[in-house]
Image 1 (cartoon, helix red, strand yellow):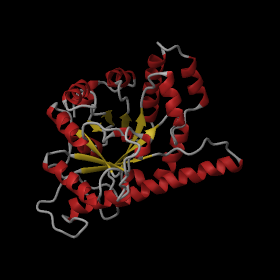
Image 2 (cartoon, rainbow, N blue to C red; image 1 turned 30 degrees about the horizontal axis):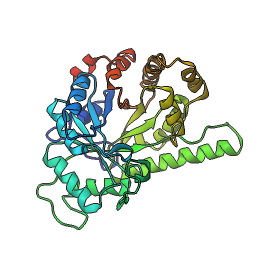
Image 3 (cartoon, helix red, strand yellow; image 1 turned 60 degrees about the vertical axis):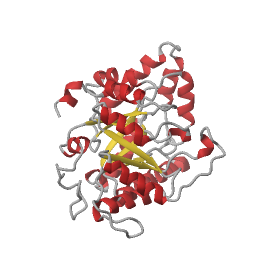
Image 4 (cartoon, rainbow, N blue to C red; image 1 turned 45 degrees about the vertical axis):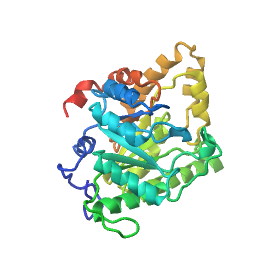
Length: 335
């Protein structure tokens, strides 16, 4: 998607635009989901999950060694999703590669027909299954977005070397809009305002670098997300980048405790209490219902272009969640 001189989203070149990009450009509510490649030398699990989601989503994220744990590569997983008839969004982290390898991976994605790339910094190796691995982080996500946009739009590598032909992708980023819980007054409230302001600034920097769509961290507190979104709209950032709100079910009490420890994931007390009170065999059903209600609420907010459903290990629940939210498969098939 080319930017207009005023910085707003410009016309889509249909010859290079992904189906996901065209849907967003048309102003239609988009749905993406997430697939984690397997820990093994087999693409079949990715293909099976992609086929399950095919009628329900516009594209699927293929994670890149998520949580710093070794998996089949995002590139291989993306090709498997393509083969299953689902448009991939290849995640690419800065954690494991220097600028030479990152640019090579980007070129390979375009050459192999992967239309969407989402760039992120990545979790530190200390959190993964090879805690003693050396982190690279030669570039951060904002720097790599700028590199990728330059490769595509100017046909140049970081070194200045010319690319023939130039690659093509729809470029995405991630953002965490949540700050500490607000109190409405006093120091904590000011801290929350500062955190939200920093999140808006980060988003603006990523858009300036080349992000055309962004997927957010989990949203459980819709009013807090709406406050962040209002500041985003005040700056016109929603007119320069498509914003997809992150959502997902909580599979177990253990998963609930884990999510509550993730920086930036804010689960309101009434939601945490409700899920904690659910029995082990009911928490998934309760969280599916909650997720569908959050999606339906998010769909009414100005500036929300779609949702990104994160249900790793529970992708079979995604169709029911979307149907409960009023997003039937016909909406995807009609595009």
